[in-house]
Image (cartoon, rainbow, N blue to C red; front, top):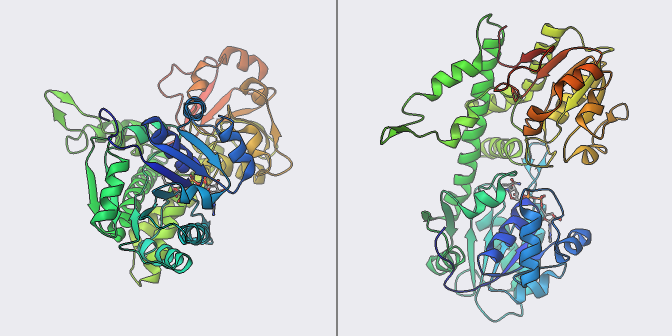
Length: 457
Ligand code: NAD
């Protein structure tokens, strides 16, 4: 990031989820005046009171600071928020609906923005930050906007597609120090307004067509999912090969200079290498639904995408494969008392959407295990998702008390600081199955048998 903005803009953002609120608070921190809009009154009340409505590291403080300075506000009144701003970012959800992207929130938000623009004489830019399949911005969004506003994209309305690449758990840092900013734009005017929003950032800003911007986001997530499924297919092979360890194999792979180049005598270790590791699969609110949406898009275009089909299949089978491996090593789960540490789809977030750890708990129950769960930030959020037999603990030790097996479901760094000798005394058994290989860099906790994934034993 460079010095700051040259022009303070009035920005409205529709949707206060991970993308909308993090973008809003960061843009407010950079000097813009931002109003965040949501239809969930409880969320708006929390934000307006200076609080974050969900867990994301650093967000609570950032929202408190920016609300206190007056740079950030929140409302349920979409019409006045849009009318008092010069640009509106759409950051509503685009969930999966039976293997297809559900664009109903996008369509409703676009129509509501159009209504608000009906009586606003000034030029206004609307930018889609949500992940949408190619053609959506110039199709669903444009049609709903123009119809409701009674105006056309061009001289009166600018249309942009500005995909977001932040990751939950590091969302503020990702937003504030992006690798690139992708700006799909209907025309040069719209693109230049969008450039002003991001004037404080000195990373490359790539201006392209609306469809190319939509594709860039899917290309990015499809590649990450592919790397994860590739790693897990290799891990499955290593798991059936005595003496093999996929972590060691990956360490060797990572040192290829085409993956981690040597610059000025130092090896550069790109973040992408973290996707080339054995795991219990990809989850969260983006990769599973975005791969499914791209597959559905391809089917609609009659284009065969066998590689991407396989990526999704490998991932769908991974939880079962990990539990099969555990049963091979430890014995059947039926009747065993199992404590699962971690429920969020990864550490640093309370997001449980498509979490492999949740799938792990569900399948453990299906296999007859008596499961107690604990997550540092998401235990209570899991209650509505899991079946009635699962028990909930207030801390890791309580989750493992009297248990036969401990399973690591999410790689929270907290696990390395647990009092493992105390846990050993509290447990009936002495087995840890680390479905995230998060204890790998530690000396194995004493008096435990530690099983890892990707390992042939
Ligand atoms: P989310 O589901 O957490 O939040 C969406 C919010 O939009 C909700 O609070 C909802 O109440 C609100 N909303 C929906 N329709 C509305 C309307 N008409 N008016 C006002 N508010 C409305 O979503 P998210 O995780 O922030 O993701 C948003 C988009 O960004 C998705 O397309 C997602 O794929 C994409 N994305 C997400 C991430 C991520 O890490 N979560 C990263 C990059 C891109």
